[in-house]
Length: 244
Image (cartoon, rainbow, N blue to C red):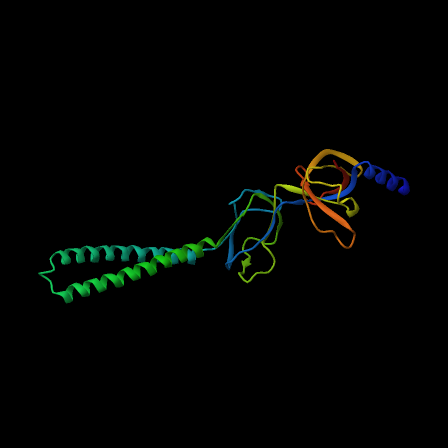
């Protein structure tokens, strides 16, 4: 039976069709962590959940960060008012320069310059506090499904790294198709790959969109890529490449 199968596949290859195996993979896969430390305050997803890009996955307790931001904004507001007052005062004094001596104007100008510098530093402090607060939230970088979760409500998260908190896989899948390198010159981009699982046809044929240039030195196989819509990541099987 095995000899008959090999003979049949060889005959098909001679007529232009090439036998191949495949495995479906997600187009994108990411191991997600955080660049912040703290206690998990809110856990929004579980393994298997589907999320959209930008969806909140996890939030750390950010009480301290929120207070820091509020204080920085209050300081910036106060300095903005001081700078406006000094600026208006300097403009009035400058219009009446003959009434005020040069030292008074220079002193006021210097004080205004100092306050403006403080205001700029405080503006940067606000931006830094906002960035630090944003790091207390973990959102999905793309749409997909949570394939793994390694965190629970109340756990401590460290910015030092370790195991990823989540693994996210994209909705779109691709087929990684492997075939004998001796048929490398036959298989072209645009050829159709018709797949089977457990010997039964899936009824789906996908166009090859990419052919990898290298040959696997261990098994002399070449790899091509096709769209895998409708198949779960990790699905495997075989099929025929309908070479033109």
